[in-house]
Image (cartoon, rainbow, N blue to C red; front, side, top):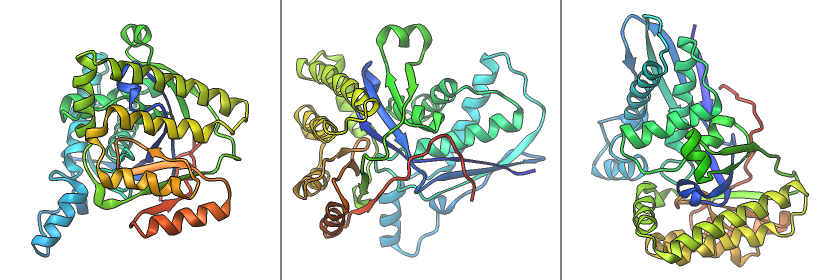
Amino acid sequence: MIIKKSAYPRAALIGNPSDGYFGKTIAFVFDNYSAQVELYETPQLSFLSASRDSNEFENLNDLDRKISRFGYYGGIRLLKASARKFLTFTRQAGISLDDKNFTIRYRSNIPNRLGLAGSSAIITAAMRAMAEFYGVDLQPEELANLVLAVERDELSIPAGLQDRVAQAFNYPVYMDFKREHMEKYGYGIYQKINIPSGLNLFVGYRTDLAEGSEILHSRLKDDYSAGVPEVLAAMSEWADLTSRMKTALENHDLSPVPTLINRNFDLRSQVCSGSISIKNRRMVEIARSVGASAKFTGSGGAIVGTYENDEMYDDLCRELKKYDVTVIKPHIVYGEERHE
């Protein structure tokens, strides 16, 4: 029997990047793209390569292009790290695994290294597949922590929890990473929420802006640890923006949403100006020039925001296309998991 599991890209609607600093965020996953993992029993443990893991290239330009998109290591390292951390988790939990092996492979069409949590999606799908294969019950909170541990502990990638939480729940989630709760339980206070259908959301991304999230997180972590007043104040304000967004969504009062989204980015610009490239900033500026709101979905490379009507959406697509930005209407996931 072949086990098939999926996970989807994430867009942070509000609050990022405060999730790694006891803040609050709201994020959702959308199934316009997906990472898919297939796992089946075999005599030996085996990890199969995907196209982004290839060591053969047409020429130097092809090598340069693919490394820019996928980095140097592809996705096999994500599967290997996932398997190792899964074993560590079960050992520490006192869970005895059946004496059997598997072959695992993945494929993903999630735009890579663009703040859409594409790597986390591969790891999440892999963890789901291994859990089903060995009959291990993983609660969403545990799954999110496990995926974060793969990236942080196994691969030394600085990151926060919000990406993994949204992907683990497969639902829009309000997350409160209150320090006392985090230190006591190891995870935040999570609440599934609904995003009203009347909220017109878009996601835009430009593939030539690919870069790892570690660039932003490393600098921000240093400033936070040093107690830089502007950074500490920003964390507090991001949390407040998230609370206000939650209230607006629950009350179906969407009028404050664009202002909250824009403020999220403006605040980021104030405290993280050195880590925002001109091209990243330009995406936001173009979106706002047609009347839309816009902020980063993650650490850069992709934006999320709102538009008022179809005419504005057409303007948004037209203007951003001039800048080689792909724009989509995200199809938000509410619990379902599909397989292709």
